[in-house]
Structure formats: structure tokens, C-alpha cells
Length: 252
Image (cartoon, rainbow, N blue to C red; front, top):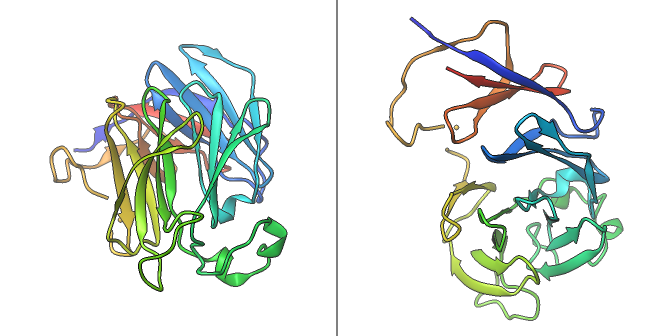
């Protein structure tokens, strides 16, 4: 017998959806959720506190969404964009707070502007890293391809690294080699600011229940849903509507 899902709420997308934009995502802890949508030219964020919804905060994107990901601080005051060549932090005033350059994921010698590589197939389909803020917003964790700008590689090919940075100014506080060859990665936030999970996809991963390590059964919905569910860490999860203009939040 399937487990029945209960619709908790439906949230409209922060920006009008088009083929150039990504579907919205719900992030953050249960007390302060962020409704986020990444477009080709900007990142739109709305804060959700209980039933209250803030006005949209818009961060200009340095490169189109297919060339990298993003991370948003818990207070929605800073956005970090991950790209082929760099991490770039932008604040609410649309000012670049800091930038950390690293070896290109596409393996090129380096570019300083998007116009130099935007039409290059190797950059469009290159592997990529990711980033995430700690629960208190003071640290940024980032998966990049080393070496960093100004460093010499140990070998002809760079190595993937996991960095911990000061979110305020981009100072590297700690780093370690991941010894991976990623197609992509995803950070898994932890309520402890000193901890973070990193899932590195090397082409053979899909999805595992980390608590029980087994399937618990099927879920029945009151209407047809589309796309993959994304867990929110408090027993609820969400799915994206078929037209990708809204999120449905569910509980058992």
C-alpha cells in the first residue's frame, strides 16, 4: 500500500519561467527557506519566513546558467557563482565582493571574460564543481579544479580540491584533494556550521536513503507530479510543477 503524500503548500516561481531559465528551487533550513531561481542573466531570491514572503533580491549573473552553479547565503545577502574558471561573490548591491580563480574545468589555458569562451563546445559541456554556505553563512565550501590562481600545478593536469573559504572576503582557510574525476558535484548542507557533505558524481551514482539504506515503499500523490523530488531535511520534500512555474511542498 503506498504512503500518501499531503500537499503542504504551493509556491509560485520568483521569475517568469522561460527556456532560458532554470526551474525554481527551495533551499535553507525550515525556519528560513529561500525560494531561488537561476536565469541566464540573474539569480532571483525570495525569503520565506512562516507565511511571509519577502520582495525579490536579484543578483546579476556573470555567465549563463549552463556554465556553472550558485550558492546563496542564509540571509540572502551574498550569492556565489561557480564557473569554468572562477568563483565570484556578488552582494545585494550588485557589487562583486571577491573572486577566486582556479584551473579551468574545460582544460583551457584560461580566460578572463565570458565572451572569450561562450561559443566553445568544450566549455559548454565541461565538468563542473559546486559551492555551498555553512549554516551560519560565515564559511563557503567549494569544489574546484586546482591549482588556484598564482599556483603551479604539481603535474601537467590539475587536481580537484575541496576548499573552505571565509565567505566575507574569499580567503582560503582550508583545502584538501578529493582524488576524484567529477562530471559534477553537489554540496549537502549540515546544521553544524563546521560540517558539510559533498556528493561527487563520476557517472555511476542516481539516489540512496542515507538513514535506512533501503527503499521504504511507494508514494501516492493526490494529483500527478513531474520531475524528481528534493528532500528539505525536515521530513518534507518538494516537486516542480509540470510547467516549472511553481513548487509543490509535500509531507506524509
